Image (cartoon, rainbow, N blue to C red; front, side, top):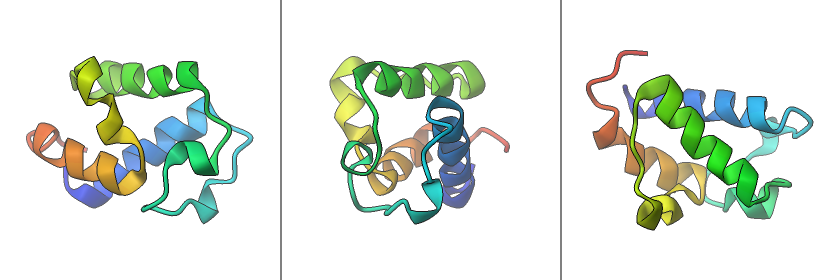
Length: 85
């Protein structure tokens, strides 16, 4: 998947997890938690959805890489390179 496809996939997951959030104003370089009402369970839901939808395994010690949209896309780009959208 290309970075823009990964970004779209993350937005879809965020929309499913937090349907009341306005994602149109989401800043790519600011932490999701600073912009949205996400708790630790919501964050785990993001990780689980990535695993379920795209078979991406994210070790717990690397969860911090998913803090913002920019860091998430940068982290996932090599892991999802062989996945077609």
